Amino acid sequence: MIGTLVLGLVAAAPQLELSLVAAPKPGPFAHRLALVPTLGGATTVGGLAPASTGQTLELEEVLSAAERAYPSLVAAQADVLAADADALTAAGGFDPALKARGFLIPSGFGPYPQVRVDSAIEGPIPGTPITLFGGYRIGQPLSSTGIQPYYRERETYPAGEVRAGISAPVLRNLLIDRRRASIARTELGQEGARQGQALQLLEISRLAALRYWDWVAAGMRRQVARDLLAIAQSRDRQLSVRVKTGDVPFFDQQDNLRAVAQRESLLVQTQRGVEQASFELALFLRDAAGAPTPPAEARLPPSLPEPQATFGDDATLDDALSRRPDVQRLLIQQRQQQVELSLQQNQLWPSLDLGLIFSQDLGTNPGTADPKLNIPEFEFSAMLEVPLLYRQPLGRIRAAEAGLARLSAQLQLARDRVAADVKDARSALDAARARVKFNRQEVDVAKKLEAGERQKFELGDSNLLFVNLRETQSAEASLREIDALLDYHRAVAAFRAAVAAPSLQ
Image (cartoon, rainbow, N blue to C red):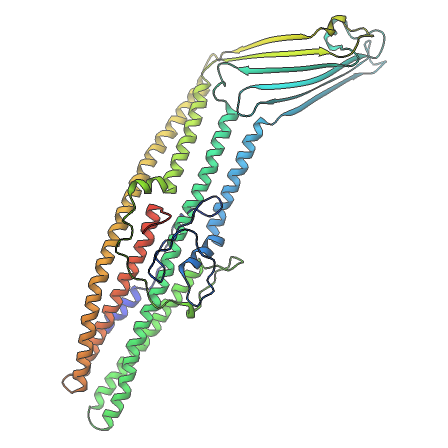
């Protein structure tokens, strides 16, 4: 039975668990998840507390440290910043631009020496397909020959000419164009990056909770081994006296010494379990510089909190689907693909752009320019473009439709995954609660049998073999109770991650 106890303690040691995801973070998010009950038994929700200054290490301190400096969360924050930069780039498509050109034909370099300057500020109205421009130009001859008669439009009054205009599409690019589509996609990309950050935080919070409870459970297993060793050591002192008085044979003392050595070995193994769990927990418990910090053993909580009978009763699958970052991120990607599909469908329309330009020369005309330039001029324009083949937009439409079909299938799988996660976590909660109940009944009976067997041994009605057997059974029952409590808290962490709930009772 001692061998069974050793195997149970070794098998219960925390193992490294790898995962790819995590959840919402203060700043871009309105709340943070508190994944498990506190040591007092009450559920803590909302914002995580700063590093505790008390003796006992609280889960909130671990989660706060992981959120502040865990590398994958730092990388997720960088993704958010990159998405913000992409949105800024897309918005730059509506930035106005200043364009200017200058021309000079000096005297002696041609029959019509002249100087010309043409400048304009042009830009689209943000969020619309309408383009505005305003400009100024001047063209003056540098000799009495004037400007080429076949280029009379280049010449202006000495004060120059002002111009302003507007153009707008009425078919293709009216409802959507590449600039507006880019802005819509990058804005959705910003939200998608924040959902990715939320997903990372959600999973990191779950893993941090698991590593924390593994550490607490490892400490409790070590305490069971310590208690078991202390019993054998105390009995060894008693047997030494009884052997001297001839009350018990020397063989019993030797057998007890064997049990002491075996239990000391068991204590070493459980100590190794505590150290291993602390190393894993240190990956989440980071200092101000972001370095892993193994927790001090003096801060080890003495026990696992009691299960809550009504935990998770207020959570529904619909709420989980509306909150899960992985589902929301797929919905965002679906909307991005729909924007691209709308853009490509719009490109099947012919292009028809209408424009209006106003121009007016300034000042008087003492030179050779046309005297009619002092009359304001309005020019209307229309430009039609009809592609003869539509292979490019048709190919992009088919690609966008294929992308939507792929995302629809992924979204269905994600929803099915959420439903399975919620059902599995709820089942694990119920099973762990039941196990804790029955394991405690087993512990109560085992303790009574252990005490009774020990009393019989003191009275000479039993032997050391049966005493060791009862003590081992009692310790094994205590270990099973610890495992059941650990499974409950692991199920709590999994359930909160499954429903992505900011608060549960």
